[in-house]
Each structure stands twice: as structure tokens, then as C-alpha cells.
Length: 189
Image 1 (cartoon, rainbow, N blue to C red):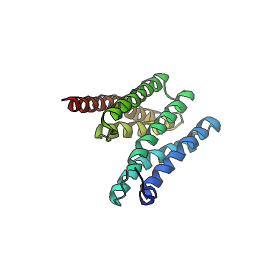
Image 2 (image 1 turned 180 degrees about the horizontal axis):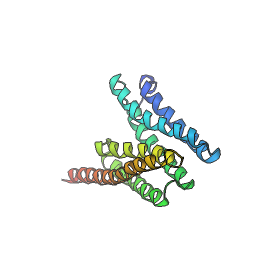
Image 3 (image 1 turned 120 degrees about the vertical axis):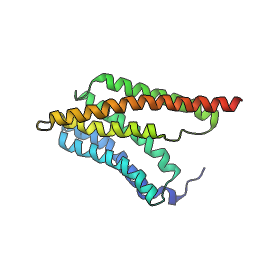
């Protein structure tokens, strides 16, 4: 499969690349420099670019296979880095790291099985998008809740988004499992 230069050099892919660069920057600001304000801004920009890259791709008719593959991969990296960073700073409990990490490991195995059987990758579902949206919006609020002034407000919104996000994240894994099982059944019928 050859990808043309035109598919690679797009505005949406640029936004996704910026989000990818935000992952190590966020970790450095939070863990290395302990700059909560700046790490909050990077986290918020990461969540915003996740929303806008898809909108811009559709608006400019610049959807690409590369973008479709990069976007969920960068989302997973962002979620993993953020959850680990926030847990190391004691802003979120470690059970959240375990639950989200276990779900992502399950999805890696499921994707491998699905791909081997069908030759395809999962198309992103609405449920998966909603889960990612909730989690990517929960983290900035949870980080903001550690500062004075916004603590209670941000804590409530952060945990609201986090609980919905975790629930939807797990339901999305069930949904993807059903898709994989259905594909396997269709293959052998």
C-alpha cells in the first residue's frame, strides 16, 4: 500500500502531529518541571486538536488512511501518558491506570486477532469517539482541580467526564469485541 505525498501533507495530519509532539512536552512540563499551568495548556490543546483534526479533515475533504490510523494511535498515547503522569503526581488514583491500561492491552490483542482473521483494522465507532472525548476532556479538569480557586468546580467536571469516559471506554471494547466475533462468524459461515 503506497501513500501519496498529498495524503501525508495535510492540515489534519499536521494537527495530529502537533498533538503527538504534545505527549512528551506534557510529561516534561508536568513531571520534569512541575509546571501545572503549562501542562494544563498543553493537555487542553491536545484535546482541542483531537476534536478539530477530524472536523478539518471532513471540511477540507482531506481524510486519509494515514490520518485515520494516526489519530486513534495518538489518542491512545495521549491517554496513556496523561493517566500515568497524573497518577505519578497523585492527581488520580492508580486503579484508573490499571483499568484503562488493561482495556488498551485487551484492544491490542483483539485488534491482532481481528486483523489476522479479516485483514482489516477496526473502524472507529461513535462509542469509541465518545469515550475518547470524555477522557481527553476529563484530564485537563482533573489537573486543574489540583490548583486553588478552581478545585471544586474542576474536580466535579473532571470526575464526571472521567467516569463517563471510563464506562464508555469499556463499552467500546465490548462493541469492538462484537464486531470481531461477527466478522469471524461471517468468515466461517
